[in-house]
Image 1: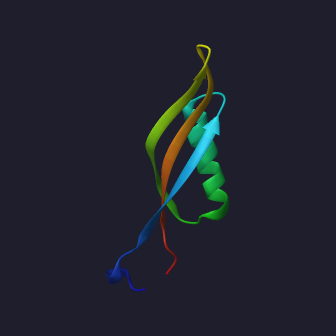
Image 2 (image 1 turned 120 degrees about the horizontal axis):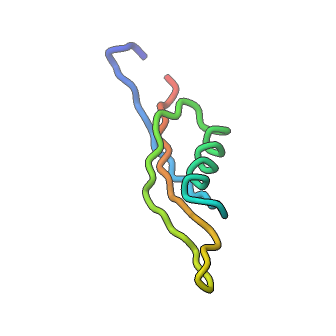
Length: 72
C-alpha cells in the first residue's frame, strides 16, 4: 500500500465490567483488546451501565468501540 492510498480502519465492540468504577472498566476493556488487536488508534465509550441491588452499585459496565488500523 502506498502513502497516497491512505489507511483503512476497523471498529470492534468490546463490553467490559468492573466492581470499582467506569474508568476501571474502560481500562480493563482496552487492556484486553490490546492483547489481540494491533494498531489501536482510539477508544470510544458508547454506553455505560451500573448494576444496582438494594441501593448499592454492584458492577460498572461499559460498551467500547475499539478503533484500529488494518495491516497493509
